[in-house]
Image 1 (cartoon, rainbow over the protein chains, first blue to last red):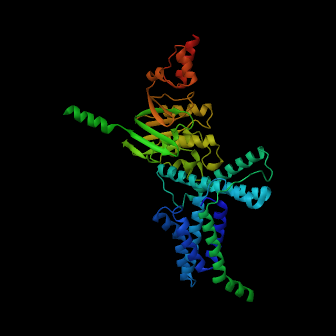
Image 2: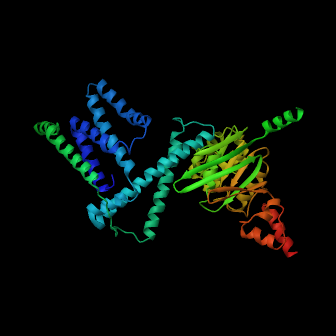
Image 3: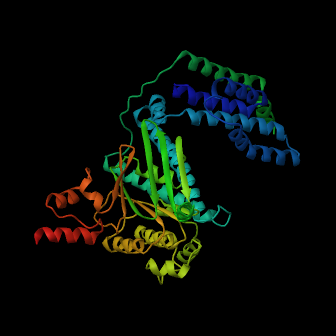
Length: 220
Length: 245
């Protein structure tokens, strides 16, 4: 998907749809199967790793008397949609979308915060990879005992990087807002996928259990 | 037959790494390398972005080539010095020295951190942390050591200290990746990366005359007919003195 506006909006709508009803979650997974499968999860192994935590949580929910299966399907849908969004993102898209929806002041600031956060996540992922290699070469293994020291290092470096970026922005004269003129490419396929995500959200609202939950909350 | 046995025994005793038509693609950048790195100090130099760090990662097995092969001979323990903080796995200086499975007291003494054993590792300066990690690496039982820009963040005395330890390392393959040639230890072999292509310049000091991309200081010395005996700081100083004499 080339248009980040449709992608972000679609992500929000499908995530909400998956959370408010089981049928919305199933339809969101189907949506991912059509438009997101080829660009997000590349292997079965990644797919299994992604689902380990929800599976454990759903087993725990079932064991404690809850609806574990429903929880598992909803969380799976949200994770799949999130992985698709992350895989398709390109640097600067949050700033583009922020300015498009929120203008040069608030939108620019929100977009900038989003961009800095996303790049920090990427740096942390790379650093974690590097650290695990360095620890292995030392002849050690990542064990619970060394995790605090190892990851405090990653966090400290990330905070130092954030401080350096803040200084750089200040030196460049940034106070708030800025000028940015985003351009978007919006092919027909993107618009169709976006329309379906809206339809799934609406269907989830109407046919799902959202109103029942709201109603019961209201009665209580 | 006896000669063959001798050759085999010499071959099996050798410690080193051989690159055979190795290539790696990163976007539009392409790295290609052929060569043998055996015991001694190898200097790998080249411009920023020429592929030195990627080659270091290939040599230490952190990344794998797209094609070609890397043959390690008797290189059981391999170490790449990255950003020093990546190696930290404990809280205090003493614990960190011990985590390298070497002589803990020697590492602390060598790095000049005697009296700071209980100090928080992240309270050390970058230079102090680098000294600690370098002391652990260079005194450790590693067969192949790749030091990526080991002089970055070190002052003049610390650089001399690194060179002294490197000069004392025998029977190891040490690959120094550096573009700073003003404070080197005695170097045995010179390699150059140019736009992703690895070239063996040769054995130092014989190869210096034919070093077409030699840095300005070396070129100045050669143009003035003063051939340095090596790339160590003392050798360069001696060659400069000969010009003035």
